Image (tube, rainbow over all chains, first blue to last red; front, side):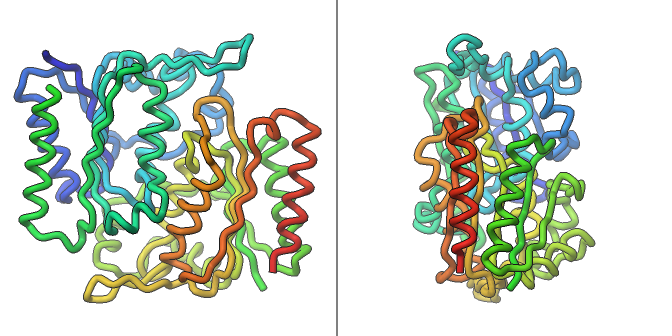
Length: 198
Length: 196
């Protein structure tokens, strides 16, 4: 089964390990006949903050934000979301958090039912979420700190997706002290999982 | 004693402004001199640039002017308070940018050659989080615990293990109901006034 994959990536340095993972993800996803679209947030100069204007339009229809229209289209088009980023301060980098704050907006990721005040999810097209991330600290330190970044994806975003949506959390811990062997093994794991879901 | 309040809101409506006001009033009543950073008013750049990333990896002190200005404020703070709306069960990207860019090696922590991290903000005794549910769009579950973990415990890497965290969390009821809202604001002010 071919999939429609949207890859979202945020890392300032194109020579970094995280960017290498991003290249790997695109290569593997493209190999098996999937359609791939890419949001490389640093390369596209994505604004890292919700502006005052966007904030005042938070309840409005997506058509009121034409500068984000292509991002909205890609989110509605995909059936697989892949996030590739380094974990900083136990969460997504600000630019990726901004993508979540700005792109997953009213009318795109959810609709508000006026009568009941309930949130109606509209990301039902998404049946897989894959996160590929690196942590500077160990797994135990991350568990202690509550894994805030994971909560954002696995609880908040996952809830708006298809009811049978599965999440794959691929994390390399203690990356600063990792050996080349460990990094290569992690890359193989990412490749294996991506091939399996395609 | 000095308290540093980091305020984040793109367009402070009445409630966001009230949250900031009670935080400042409460900390003043506790005998602190209060500095306020308003990230949106400062037009803070939340994205770490490639150049700053390279400085980060060398573990040297930051070179950008805004990072250095915030480092000076952080250096004299004993209480560090954050006031923000919750979006997607976390802080807005603007505040996340403050963590990414202002709390860097040379300011928040020091990296030794053997990879050990030692805190650089040991003078911060208390971390305070004042936040409100911003419905709709996210689904806060066990938010208070989540916040005290992600702020308090993560920040202990910068402030040392003895720092304690106070979370004042206004749930959906308190953000929509004006009576509950006033009660929440009064309670928050009292809790902060009692902060030692």
